[in-house]
Amino acid sequence: MKDRKSRFEALNDFVRSRNRWITSVPGAVDVTLECLPGSMLPDELRKLGYDVSEIGEGERIVPTAIVEKFVTGADGTFVALTEGLTRPVASTVTHAGHLQGEALRLRHALTRARAECPLLGG
Image 1 (cartoon, one colour):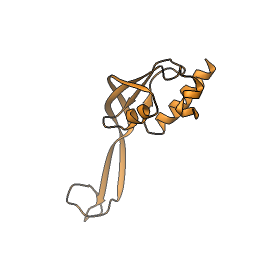
Image 2: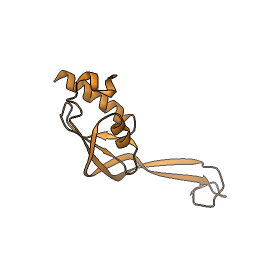
Image 3: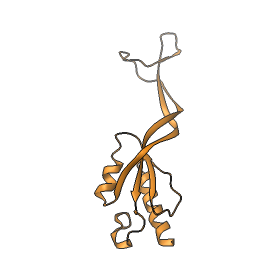
């Protein structure tokens, strides 16, 4: 079990470094994760030898999902940046937002022998 948890931690670090999310309990045999549509993470994991399958959709509230950019107007106030405006961005504001993406399962990713685990140098 301790070895499985260390593999889970390595996998979680790998997934989080790509701004994606594992939603499984640490040490779970089948790992569930979420990523945005078009993410390269599933392909990366397949190349590392993991059995990745789609299991549906996931939902997540992300603190920086919405990004608004503003330029300074002629009167000095902030004006939302729109297509065609060529003034430099004076302010960027982020807001939480709701994202929908793919939910994936890595089958038996953490039951592999340590020597076979690509995230642990195998």
